[in-house]
Length: 315
Length: 253
Ligand SMILES: Nc1ncnc2c1ncn2[C@@H]1O[C@H](COP(=O)(O)OP(=O)(O)OP(=O)(O)O)[C@@H](O)[C@H]1O
Ligand SMILES: [Mg+2]
Image (cartoon, rainbow over all chains, first blue to last red; front, side, top):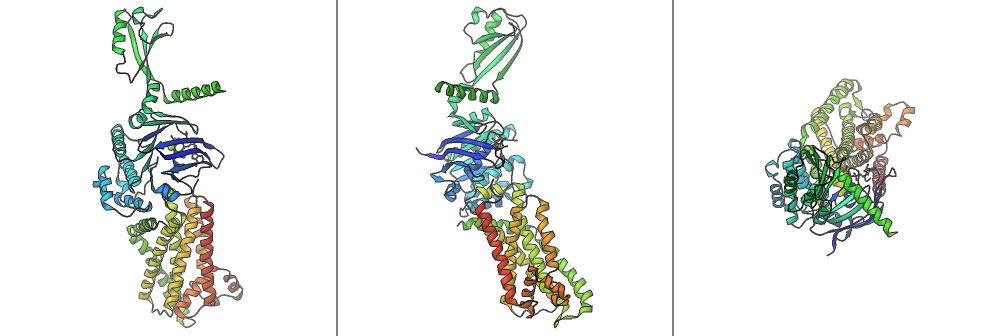
């Protein structure tokens, strides 16, 4: 199957000389949801901007639906919908007019029935005659989505769709994205949160400092990253791990004051309950328990390390 | 050519005009009426006639020009500056449109608004003075060209401006003085000779003079020269816009 979005060695150096993208290559398949995961300043928005025509790449090429985004920009852009990171909307416009404007701007003939259905799907229809300034932040983000979908695009970019959105709305957003996927739209979203990428995406691309570190199926990546550690502080220091507990992935730290248990969050059973029971059985008393997951930063550092090592091996 | 996009931009801009219709109309109409009271009645009672035309009527073409120029300029510059300011420009940049569609939409709407307000002033004026228009086609042509060229000029300013101060700078520092010194309220023949020569360097003089000729058949400069001047100005604006388009100046990062 050919790629819906084909990114080849895209570079972007901003006017001041800062290189925000250092040769990114990526194929996005038709109908998939791809999450671009990366910390602040990684280049996520820059990459999306280069695809959508908001910024001019300084190197490489991009095709959407087979059309070069620079040379055949009309055909390429007509296929794209973009929900920007910031809530940028004309405050005095009504929801309905905003959606109709976007549809026209993207060269689609008026179709009130389509817009009506779209607004209903986004639970915006009863607000259609309200001015945008009267809406809450979450609704404004839906208006942005409605605008982006107003011309029935084949590819949708969502730049941090859940930034500044409460838990409930976040779930909502996940559902909206899932429903969109059902209609066959290819979706690219960016996020800072690995859980979010996991919940929504078929594949995850990790981007840092203008480089795409890896792109992997969500399940495969999560299996690699889904390990969590539990730190068990003990009342009495242990000299060694009790023999009964040798089956568990345990190690001692702080001169025997703490036991570290690592487990797979995605495994059918984490073994925590049985391990604690075994500890009690062995007469170990527990002072405190705390769990931690490697932060996104750790993951990035780990990934960069892995890659550097791989390069070192190859050399 | 994406005509649906042109239509969408034009409609959205006109919707803004309609939303603020009263403000948009009332302030030019009131200020015109004030001009009539101050210039027409107070000063006019002493000047009486300029080359056979009552002073009240004489200032009408200049007043219309004054308003049309400032309206076209400010509407177009604000129209394109506003999306830059609030960030909605992203949508224009990501849409399947070239600069041409964007210009047609914004400049077309700004010119329409200015034209409409110009006609409102003409109607207001007709309540104060008796007006005759000798050459309707010339009157319309001058009015249209002025609307379009100043809207283009405003569009360029709006693209160029990085903040609200810059947006106000050119209208305040360049356009308003030129317009006031452009013979709206007097015939440049009434000026001392040396100043008449200086006045000929003011492009607005040619516009007002040509426009006045369409009304009364009398002009400070030959009407052909006026037409050439406004044509030249329009052309200059079109070239500037074309250059901006070619270089992507200040629009895409
Ligand atoms: N117009 C610009 N001019 C110069 N540098 C820019 C410009 N836009 C972005 N940058 C820089 O490029 C880098 C990447 O920015 P970008 O907005 O793409 O990051 P991001 O991954 O979207 O970050 P965030 O998660 O914070 O949104 C940053 O270092 C940023 O400062
Ligand atoms: Mg961003």
